[in-house]
Image (tube, one colour):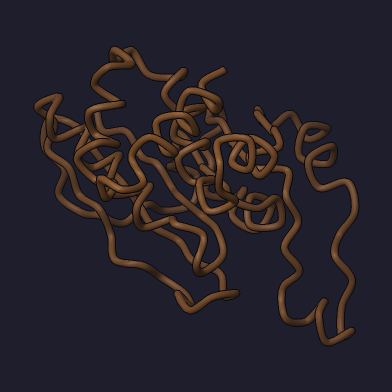
Length: 188
């Protein structure tokens, strides 16, 4: 059975590193893995989507609406934007951080209120927490992606040591201690 994970965020947040860690982990577990290219504006500030699919045999890297087992969101508006891709019994794991998109910055739109409550009220399984605060506690606001990986690891029956090994294989050595701390804080 193929599992589908969407990673959604804003350019510059480390969504690619998160997808690389997931891909590395699932390969080490013996799965066939497909990781998509980035869709969207990968420069800082634009919406970015990456797909990670793994299973016995995966033929396509693309996830269609209603197919995602997990949506990992680096920002709550991005979680809400892609909610239609979630399976009925899927789960959104999201950072509670708000990053204003360009229409909000320019005054052409307002940031929607109560996004997480609204999704929960629709019966969507949402695990929302302040990843930025935990990343800062680990030592860098840039570690939000690793905090999220820590949280995601709780939902998989894969030993935590294997997750940590995947982080070690994907993160530059000079940032490893900080990222190990971020992972542990995210895992809780």
